[in-house]
Length: 379
Image (cartoon, rainbow, N blue to C red; front, side, top):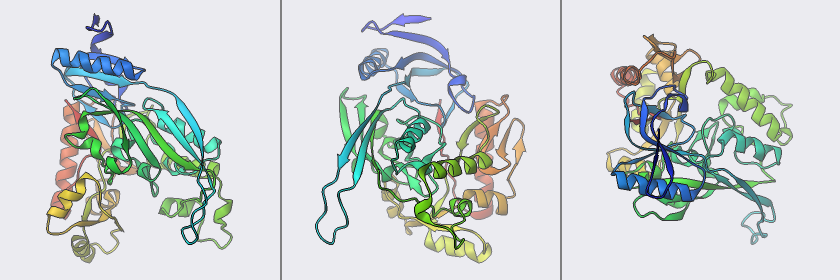
């Protein structure tokens, strides 16, 4: 059914959302509107205000768990498209400050563009910076919210700014990298005030004269970095993308074969002291030093110990908890990557939530580590 808003914008009612998420879970939206232009988004926000309902943004649906019931909100599907490639020439730096004169490009993409599609285009054009982020599902607009990352790279490393509409003021403004307050799978957009911001465009600074980042273990093994014949400069962008996609294909299920949101849980961040205690009991437990920043930094600093080590939750789930491939009913942990939760097509949102809570409880009992969801719950 279609209704007319005060601005003559057509809005759908009681729209099924299940097929708009990769988990294949979800009820209906009280109101639903697909947005292709910022002007339409402004009208949708006004419509929600008239109805006294919240606005819920849906991008590629790859990082959400929707309620099975009707969501009493205006659900906005962001389809803002368009990609611009603006060449930049950085002037030579002063002596002792590094080299300049390198060719860069400022890539400005609409929030509704496919993230992996953007990565593929950048690689074809010969630009470095996001090749390690190949294969990540979802849209460009959702990428800064999570500060998506993989294989030693995060979007914060290349992001220049985002443009966002503030649903409270109705104004669009540009937000710099620093203002985004990026942290591990964290940003200002996940804070109470930041949730009023709807990203419409994203700008990334990529380089024509880049260098491969192959320090992550899987990439080291893939490119045989320890082999004396290895030559880092000979690794091409296309080769890195192919390698990343091959690694991901071994770790993640096919989105067409089952319902999944990718990595359902975050890797825990703990203090150096807590990590040292765990290492006494689990000698092989891997840990990676991490400088905490972003919105979580203030919370971490308020405690007795500031988190400085990122753990591999996949390793914990497999080697300590014995949960790799664990299943209950219609839900389970993926056999090749226990960070990934999958469902067979018959699960409910309540079933997935109960399963996820059980995993969190088991990890807490075994290790005293608190595990957080990476997936956003919307009800």
